Image (cartoon, rainbow, N blue to C red):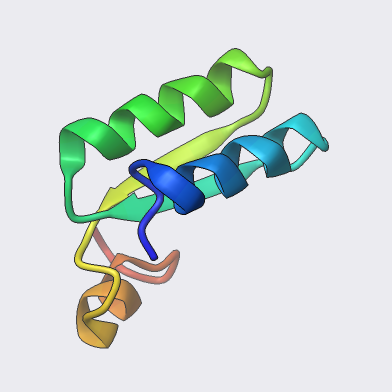
Length: 68
């Protein structure tokens, strides 16, 4: 489940409301940026990743150890 909207976006926002910093990922870059802005508006840090979350290779490459 991506974090651009729906359940994924709601979970990201709820985590931020509870005080968590959140990484959000989805294949829809514009929408994932919207979710990231909502998390930031709640006073939390966020990183937005544009990846196909059902593609394990893309998710692994987008992780914190990736060069890009």
